[in-house]
Image (tube, rainbow over all chains, first blue to last red):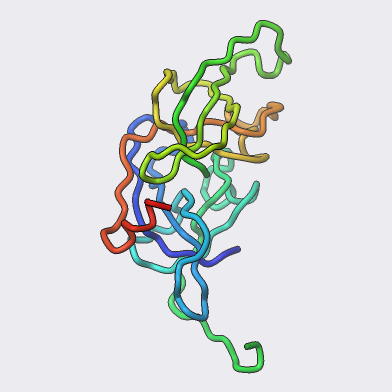
Length: 93
Length: 98
């Protein structure tokens, strides 16, 4: 799982049948210590109903499709949690 | 998932029987502001009915075998949706320039 920030929404009328009722968000990796965006923006299906500006956790690879009720979702990136806060002890830094 | 534009349709007559119903497209990957990246992908697509010039989302890796339900197709890149538009929050607009 990785930490990212939701930066946008994708509009699509014509989707794979397994995407019914699922939103596609644009997310970008975030540094948990500084809150700065890093890397490139990517697209992710939304399993939790996040909104723009929120920090989320996302899952990649085959298990990303398992976040939904039906198993056969064609997804390689899924938002699986909304992050409220991150605690990092000084020892780790 | 990645974002791209369909550049070419691929025609192939001899295929693995498991991908008989599938069409292939050559997709050029794009940045969020639709400027082209120098990366191409050959993607499979089954039921959407797309054409050259459509903006699409690409699924990479093993989930793409779910293209036609749980049927284990030998595919590793698939087109999952046609994109109408992308809304990026004003605060992050400068990211689109890449």
